[in-house]
Length: 380
Image (tube, rainbow, N blue to C red; front, side, top):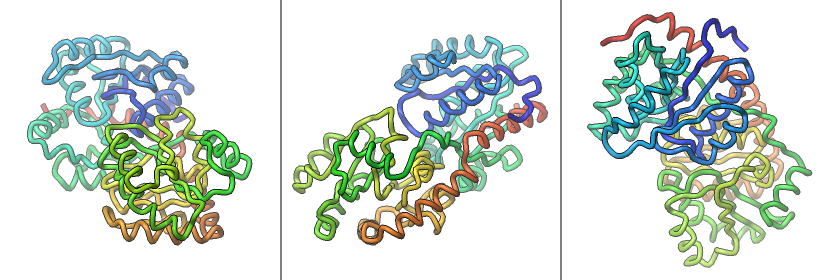
């Protein structure tokens, strides 16, 4: 690991540790930091969540602010107490955590430095109140990391964060968590209850509107006419689960769709897919796409956010967002060409190994922390 100098205590501030891409990044980063000799802790502003248990098992302290609507003084007090406890760096992840951390640090003598990570394109900043809160917190944050070039452009070109305080740090994943090959494929399909000889499209993500799973369900009847063994697997839970299941039943494709729910074994299940599909309408630096790349899967994703940085032409196919016809054509072409799927998957694995490992992300954040400590004060 890069020399940490006097950086030892690191407090990550997040909305929660529910299953999701941002939360997975925080979990993996904290585990990597602890393995390298630091003392990371995690403060959940609203609630803990499923990932908290893994951190606690590793000896990482997780606390919760139990934030209520509006400015919650009790949550601020709980965060202030967490910051006071041997902390060199406060690392806030996304908008509200950054604001609450900045508020607390204004009341702490010899406060640690505050750095922030922007994990998405900032679409929620259309809310004027949230935008005003975040802009205030920017003035009190030493450095920011953006998880993709497109995210950097959105915040910097949009006048939200000064360019001199903005860096790009790609999300990283532990590559050994994602097996691939015939044996891994057979095991994954057995876990999911899938026929070993089926063609399988898979997607991983919360069942929420921006992930646009409905477009995959709309494409399925036409794809089944050309690929009668086809199955669609959706891993994740969320507010649209009931509606998506109802739509599948309405289209009489419910026996071809597996709603796998939230799973802790996603890394092992990915090997059971032939094609990984991500039809999102917005993304930052998608952990799901990095995981699919690590599992050597051929990928079809929408041309939004950080997706073009991950899905190189050699490793996958990009289609316009909200274009059901383009998505269906791309899926049909890949399902019809096993050799091309294999070639794309091998290239995707090579890219993620070179550019988005957990070790590379961990070391980049050490550099960010050090530069933040050397930067001196920010605008008051």
